[in-house]
Structures are given as C-alpha cells and as structure tokens.
Image (cartoon, rainbow, N blue to C red):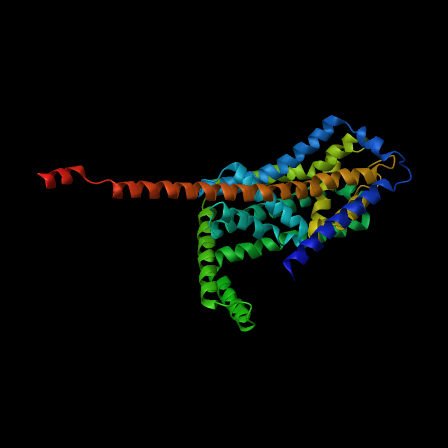
Length: 371
C-alpha cells in the first residue's frame, strides 16, 4: 500500500474514533449540560490524571533508559522518552500496535543505539509488561472474584481470552533469544522465499544484516538473563508504569465527584478492561476499549455521566499520546539535524586544523637553508 495512503487512512481512523467517543459522550439525554460538567470536574483529580499519564510514559521510558545505560550506551533520559513516545504514537495508529516497537527501535537507532540492543531494550520492556499484566489480572480476579463476576457476568470470558492473548507472545520472544539457531534457520527460509518473489533484492546482504542483529540480540539477552538486579529493575518500572495506566479511571471517577464504589474495585475493573481489550487488532484497540468501558463500568458511574467519563479517560490513555507523539516526531527531527550540524562543524574544525599544520612552513628548516 502507498505510504501516503496509509497515513491518510490512519488519520481518518483516528478522526473517526474521536468522533465516536464524542458522540457517545454528548448524546446522553440524561446529561443536558456536558460542557458544564467538564468545567466542574475537581481540578485536583484532573491534575492527578496528568500525573498518571506521566507515570505511565515516564516509567516505561526509564526502563528502556536503565537497560541501555547498563550496557554502556550514553543516552539521556529525555532522548529515551522521545523514542518511547514515538513508539506509543505508532502503536496507537497501527493495527494490533504492530508499528510501535519497530518505530521505537528505529528511533533508538537514530539516537545511536545498535538495532540489536534496541530490539532487546524494547523486547525486555514488552516481556516484563506482559508478564505483569497477566499476573496482575489473575491476582485481581482471584482477590475480587465475587465483585468481578457480579459486575461483568458473562463478559468474564473476554478477560480469560485476554490473559491468554497477552501471554502468548512472551515465550515466542524468549524463544528468539535463547534458541537463536532455530530463528536463524527460519529467517533464512523466509528471506529465500522473499527473494524468489522479488521482495528482497540482495539476499546475502539482507541475511548478513539480520545475522548481525540476531547476534547482538542473543548476546544482550544472555547478558541480561545473568543479572537478576537488572531484571528486577525492569519489573519495578513495569509495575509503576501499569499502576499509572490502570489508575486513570480511578482519578476520572473521583474527578466527576462519583462515590459508592471503592477505589480498589475500580482499579480492578480498569486492569481487566485493559487485559480484555488490548489484543484487539485495531489501532489503539478502538471500539473494544470504548465498548468495554461502557460494559465494565455500567452502574459504577452515576447520573448519566459514563459517556463523559469515557471521553476523559480515552483522552488520557489514547488521544494525548497521539498529540504528544506528533510533537515528538518534530522534536526528534530537530535533534537529528542539530546533531548532524554539530558533527559537520566538528569535522570542519578538524579539517581546518589539519590544513593549518600543512600550510605553516617549518621556520627552522628555512633558516638552515638560508645559512
């Protein structure tokens, strides 16, 4: 598909999803003055929503930064945050979040991180997140069994399916790390096939690049597996990041002045909603997230407020990432241009210094010649 057409379709889908959420929020007949309700939100809890967003994005970025710096790469936390937000942006505009991780790896490459180590950094974040998502979902269901089954009813099956779908990719990624020869053979067959249908022009060069990446990936994963402390840091970052994400609905609940349901029960439903909707093969899991919110929190939000609650929650968990992600794309381009300019100036200075050394005559030799 034409790249321009892909961008147009992605933008159209985002606009469509925004329109659907706004229609749901403002078509509620029980709530006549929606704008007034938004203005009356408790500002303290609204500030907390921004804090939740920062914790989610910031801790995800810190996990990546900690790993890369432990490998000796001098990358700043801010540069890592840019790469992470760009990854979030592409995750939210591509089906099944398929474009997020490759684009984050590409962004890390532009920051000077080899593709193999960038792949490990992203994979480690993904693995620790998925394991904690599944573990959190299971524990919350066990400890809140009666409430969950009463609130969700038959929809509990969506949670069970979500747990399976979220965990399945984990062993596949680990397989690529610890069974390198299997992956090498599979990659060789795939490249041979792509070469036969003329999608790969230089088969040997492509395989050499892939082999180099697999070598770096395998080496880095083996090093990480021998460091319990580094693994623990990744899980701690994931725990803090997911806590920020799952707490968003809790803050929305209290920002609208709602009461009657304990915060830990709302947190439980929030986590289970993510588990059951995140695997949906649509950009940003659109449709599943909105429908799941209305289903899971029916009766939790009172006074016909659920549509507005959906709008605010979706803004902080989806649309804000799109807005910030676009800005980060421009910031990254500016950073790359600045780095290239500085490198060019450095080379010019070195060249000028070399030319001066060559041009300046040796006065001692001149004097000896005159004598």
